[in-house]
Length: 508
Image 1 (cartoon, rainbow, N blue to C red):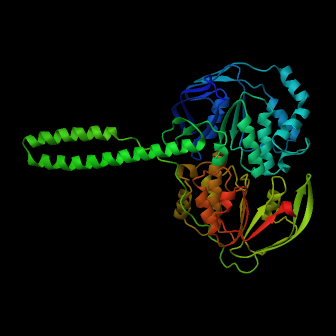
Image 2 (cartoon, rainbow, N blue to C red):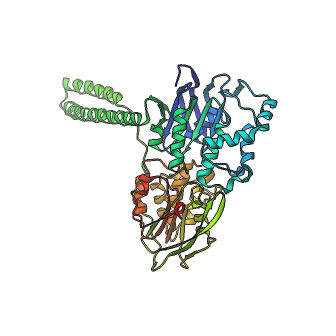
Image 3 (cartoon, rainbow, N blue to C red):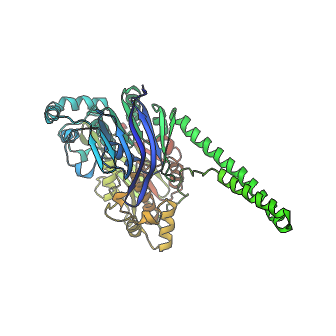
């Protein structure tokens, strides 16, 4: 239950990342015990705001105040690459490697409001194993403490990230896309946890139903004005309020435009008549200037990507893919199961099953030619959308990535394709590693368009993606004419794509 006590306050905060401005004199506050959604377009800077709150980044101007004595835990979108070799136990210990403290951040200054003693931190690590086991039960995950992180599925890694944040028992919980890779049971479990949660929580997510289950207010980061607007109410009500406000502003401008055009015509007519009518024309032009100032600066809604088509590899015929066996993970051990699946052009397979059963591992081996019990026709190009974007070279620019993928295209075609995915000239010059997760997803789709694959393998293609883009993506996949294997835990997305066969690994 939220109280009137403000525990986070942004005072005219401005911030730039590289040459890109994220915030321009942004003001907002968060009260103790509130559950807030942070909204905004892909690449607007939502994750950056989390880093500003936690003190990892400092504002260029203005100040950020976190109330004295309040600790912060940040559950990131993905496990960092450098942590993938850690065991479960080591991963949880990193949460206590440095004292957690609240900060007051202003230009050129950072003040520690309090810190844990090293003995307290050592004490937490000393009894960490029973605490880990208890917190893993909270997120509904069975995980041996000596198991390496990279061996877990995407959904299991999402639960580990959440558990690592919860175990810190901080006063403020920041969750960045916590439902990514989670199956239906995982999302339901998390929704109930947050509904019962007694402390302050700020969440970034594109899952509307999930957000509506617990949200009490919304912070809306406008990518065009660089401001943050604050709303109260559940998620659906706030989204409707934003939409209605935008429509009112649009209609007001339409009325003013009509009035201005009419007055301009009259002013021009009177000006040509001469005499005292010129004075009338001058006064009318002054009124036109006043009306121009009354016009509301229209805020453009988040843009959706353009409709697109993934071209199919030419000259495909007959059998493209044949599966005779798959490996299923049960009790952290792989068990081989017999199957009999053949895919030809325009045939789609939905690979189903709960988190941790082996879907991502199977798709990776299939895409790289290391799966047993499978046959891909020689010469078939595979387009692989991987949920962690590890098929992208994070050191290359977006332009270099798309140029490498393009087959027999021109510079103009590349840039046109990129623009359709909201990848402008500035983003094309940006390294993949510097993009938001949502922007990486759009690059991955643009890459598929330019690759012209014969077999499309998609592992959770809606992760990190703005909800406005999802119907466009579903339409493109439904129209794809090659063979396709899809993994998705979003039923509304899957319903928009024709599926010919379903392979449920849990049922094998």
